[in-house]
Image: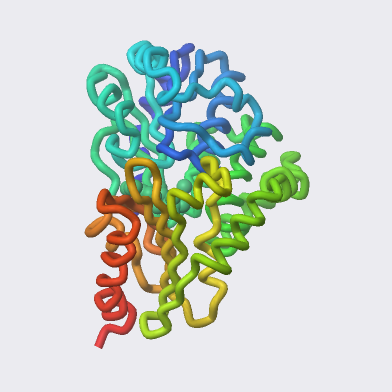
Length: 340
Ligand code: 5GP
Ligand code: MN
């Protein structure tokens, strides 16, 4: 599904004079969420707008180096300032999320601003209808790829300088799992152009992937050695983490990023689940290979969503029951994988 902002002319007119722009992205922001927000932050600041970035919750440490990330406001930590930023904005961007329920309290506040123009740029399935200007491309690798397209649509391709390019590259790199999935010829052309525009891909990979702490590798070892279960009859792998694991390994936001993908390295695993217990909820991250859609499982059974091959959700029934519930769904997933 492709929605390509047919009314971009109207947005261009709005952007012709300085505006108060608020860039928002989803809870537990990842490389694509922060990359798309900071790409547009750095671009709009250079064009003379007053720009703020507001995210629901903290971003992971491995993104700490991103240009101007220190300016990002975290709603969980400063709700009053966050509310003010939402109320003061002329234009609110929703980046890398497809419904206001993905940004919790921020979503309610944004929804109330009925006179504020809203822009959505996102690549998730089934976008809600809340924005005045919509770019929705579920075939895009990342929202960052779409931010690149958006700058071209605005006729602002020369705004893609090395700083903006680094932010775009970050989201592409992390959302494709280092160019392993959701790639296309178009994407590789974009990446080639980013390098021509001065992006240092080697340096960025080093900053993003080679800055782990020893505890992260120990956590990975623990997950693979003690917390992994393979169910060959369903071509499914599960890794789980308990609340105690969180304390013992001093797990912070972002530390578990990517662990679920290790399961897909197994030839016989087509569906992977990472189930982890947090203080109030149990989060589930799902991945799949090929034609099997985990988006539907996340949506139907875990109040979540995402993409066909990468989705997530949550439950409120505790870790053991969530694992049981997920296992009980496996026969139906197998039916999806092998339609008779
Ligand atoms: P992850 O497993 O890395 O947290 O998320 C994978 C994909 O699923 C991302 O695109 C993310 O936006 C989506 N996703 C994760 N958790 C949720 C959720 O609770 N609700 C919805 N709608 N999407 C989610
Ligand atoms: Mn994304």
